Amino acid sequence: MICGTKTNGTNCLIIGSNIQEVNLENGQELDPMFEVNISTERMMDLLVHQYSEWEVQQRFVKHLEYEIDRKGQPVQLTTDCITFVAKKI
Image (cartoon, rainbow, N blue to C red; front, side, top):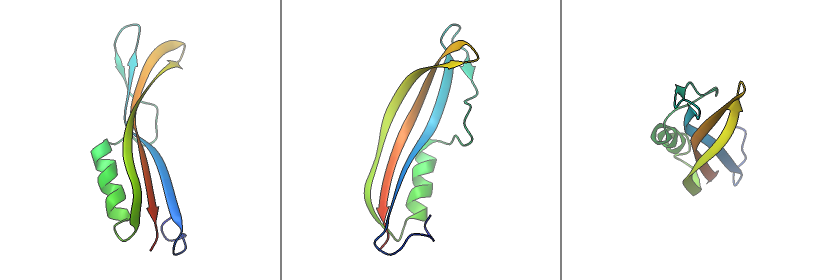
């Protein structure tokens, strides 16, 4: 994305991080079913490093919680939702 963006172009990334899943019936912590799951702090460090020569226009984290179904079981999914917007200068 960085290489393919023209000068004055913008990248907007919305990324789930720090994902946790807990079975609501028995409280068992489950392995989240996501390709990448790293801490919010580590993800922010990666973004700041990769976009170090860009103008960061927005950067914030919102904590989200959802009740989902995993194999017929109710599960509480929690995640930090990172929004990161940077303009190539």
